[in-house]
Length: 308
Image (cartoon, rainbow, N blue to C red; front, side):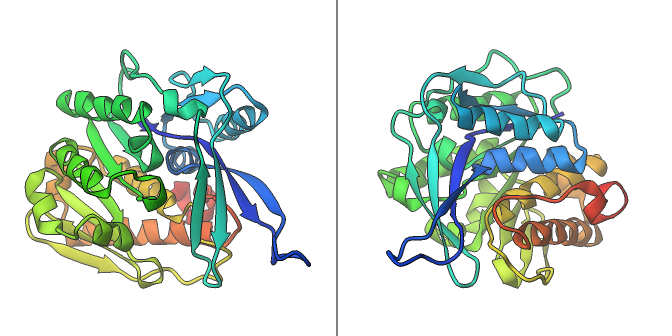
């Protein structure tokens, strides 16, 4: 089983251009980086559990409903009466999305460290707002450290939202402190630049590999052994890019699980041909997500035999 830990929220996505007042109507969509990753893994057919704290309001029920349909295990989900976090998306002409967050006093910020993850947990994926917003951020950080020490494969996607980071330098230092507990680091090119861009230093600190996504320019991987491999983006008509990076996370984990490579040593042993196949699969999966509005990752059947 792969456990995805982090926030579930509601994206408010513009429904076309603005009206006479200049403001577009906003459509609620289930979202949040970790939520999208769990949803994508479930749709790809990978045994997945979601670990979070979700509101008992109507939005929270809708979020959990989407995961249930995808076959995601919800036994690690905590519930609370506080409202669901809202993220208001602004979509650019090229489909890229920016966000404003309404997160004060919301349910996911009160996440508490679970006693244990399910038996058979092979990997843990974390990232985005959940590692910024306290007090939940400290609980997620403790989960990362604890499970890494137990030998669980870990994927970190910081997915930086600068508007919610109260102290950029303090966050960058905290990010570096996580690296010894990370097996695979996935960053966008923008995140990498914001974090300092020291891929060589990051690899030396812990991860066996760093995957960098570059939107329409494709993605690459840098390995601790010195390998560097890249693939082009899969071309589609882009509706928006919401959830594309989260889909990449899921596709990477799905393919690594199929290869039996959810381990530090196994990941280090992957050669260029394996990495090209893994990245190409992730690029195709992300392209499907980009081809439709909101975070709607692909099902296995949309990507070929059993999603492989």
